[in-house]
Length: 132
Image (cartoon, rainbow, N blue to C red; front, top):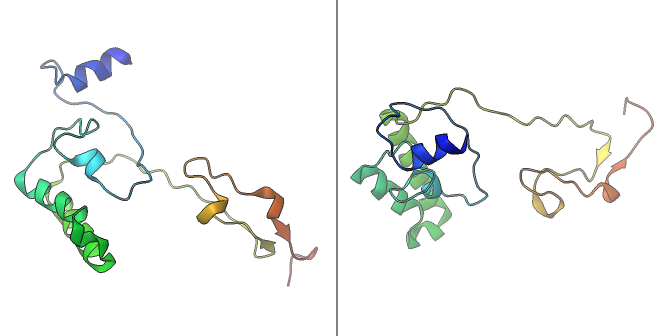
């Protein structure tokens, strides 16, 4: 496995195609995975348009939420058109919780990303009965 990543990161000529996995960071910016100098841009997809769109997402103007949402959507449309990366599968974490459960949160201060550690000392069941 180490040899594989060493070759991919060194842009070895004996690798024409590869398959690998990664997960997203908590930073809401695709630049850490898709910009020219990103260590995880192992597909080496670099264009002037991609760089411009990524820079727009992280620009000073992007402190305006509406601007950043529009910038993200433009970048997503561009990446879909280019099809530089094609996912084979996507993992969806699904947490079914009965409506009788109180104080179970998947966001905010009560959870930790990728570990989903709920503050269990505050979770409550509001009724013994399933129908309420």
